[in-house]
Image (cartoon, rainbow, N blue to C red):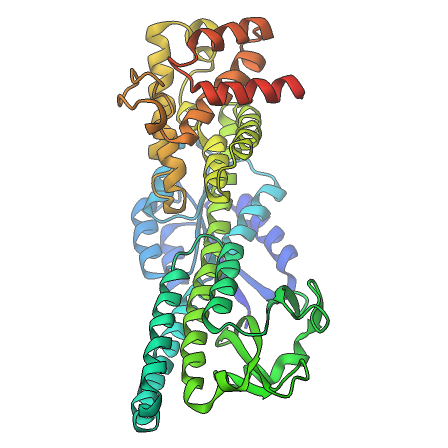
Length: 496
């Protein structure tokens, strides 16, 4: 079935231009309709479902704000792209807050528009996948209920093993708690592997992760399986296809060839979404019929955790697209800020790694550094010079503008920690900042970026000498700046 896109623009030349580049990009897989006013747009929308709407902000015969709010609410899987000859950050943000996916100013290039359309399609696909995941998770819950019924039916048989079962259930409860915190897909996989090994204590264990692009399973982590499944080994999907025909675990003869062992295979998937599978080789005593239910429960818990982690990573990618859009917007309005932000981000990440911060903290600092100057987009470029920065009154204007950038990214919940970093960026180490935070109570990301941003501004924008910069930092260390971070910065600068 062909995808349908509607372009609403009273400038026929622009609409036809968009239609041609979209049709060229998608060829036989797309059908593009054009409307030149609000009435024609409404008639076309009433005639069928559209995958995407591209609408000019000044389209005659329609209130575009009302249209965005109503249409996006009724059609959450159909992204809206607003185009306009007016370059206005407030207008763009209002459109996005109303429900639009993106805002593109005229004139635009073919590459720019195709990038926005591709990203919008990816977001649409992500939302559709999320919907399917929700349905699949519901089925998983039903399976869990059926499993609980099975526990009840097996109660009489398991009475003799009650003490052992209760002990294992307690282990599973602890297991579920230990893997419930989602950080990233990789860290979740590591945590799940370690906890599964701890709970069941198999002789050998291996985790395969599935790559949908290559249709291969790859050994991601193993213990005592190096001969059979060396780290990095790839195995075609067909070799494991039998394990994904049912939601139940499989028990087979020992892959290791050990007489007193059995091999247990736990497929991790929901519907058509395959994550991977665990293979455990363990003593027969641990795989008796009455204990299989424990593996079933563990598989369901594992599936929920890894699917949630994968969805977390997919959501993060969507937010990264928003972050990139912000950076390009920053560059168009205030040339040079994007390059400065990228330098600050790279230097901040170096310092964070020297401080041995966690991967999550480093990622939050990286994003905050890239976005920390968004609040300056509506300020005059004349304000961004050394005389203004070192003037007490004008510095307050610059400071408050930068801090206001935290409000711009407030709708992006995945960036909540980065938003906090920007919000407290100008807290002074001695507690004389806007919120009176002192020393280590200031978020570490705020302390790092305050130093790196000012260093890069002093050097690249204000053109101060290294001697002058060193003097400023030396004079204000322990007052404005964290002494430990200043020391790391100077070490990096000296060795670069």
